[in-house]
Each structure stands twice: as C-alpha cells, then as structure tokens.
Image (cartoon, rainbow, N blue to C red):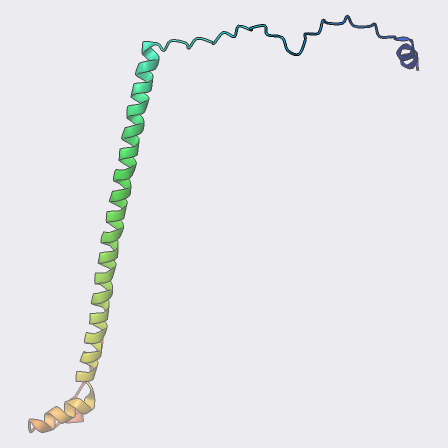
Length: 126
C-alpha cells in the first residue's frame, strides 16, 4: 500500500529539449574507416599450415574413397566367382546323381554283357 502512495506523489520532471536540425542541412559528416589490423608472422604461418593440412586431408579423403571403391569392386568380383563355382558344383552333383542312378547302371551293364547281382552289392556310407 505504501508503494502506491509513492507512485501517485511522483511527478516526472520535464526533459530539456534538444535543438532540431533543419531537414535540408548540408553539413558534411566525417566518417572514419576502421583500419585493418596487421597480420603477424605467426598468424601467416598458422594459416599456411592450416591450409596445407586441409588440402592434405582432402587428398587423403579422396584417396580413401577410391580405395574403398576398389575393394568393393574386388569383393563383388569374388562373390560372383563364388556364385559361379556353387552353381557349377550343384550342376556336377546333379550329373553325378544321374550317372549313379540304379536303372542307368543296369542299362550300362546289359550293354556290356554284364549282370548285376543284388546279393553281391553292398552300399557303404560314411
């Protein structure tokens, strides 16, 4: 409550008026340009070393990307060879199973004048 009384008692004092300039005044204002700070030898060396490191890292990145690309291509070639050998092995197994068919063995035996006696045949499996 006491603060409310202070607010009502306060009367702001009038601020002094500043002189106004005419709208079309031709007075020249001097604007000074800030001078550039000189670059020290240490800063020049630091910039040079930083630039060389940046260029070196860019070259290293490109070289690494090329190496990874070559390794992926080699891996793809090896995978293609593996698939080719697996297909050939499957085909060879199928051919072996066809050649070992019992009816085919009996047919070859008859063509060569042989007979197949079941009592003398024994299958051994591991």
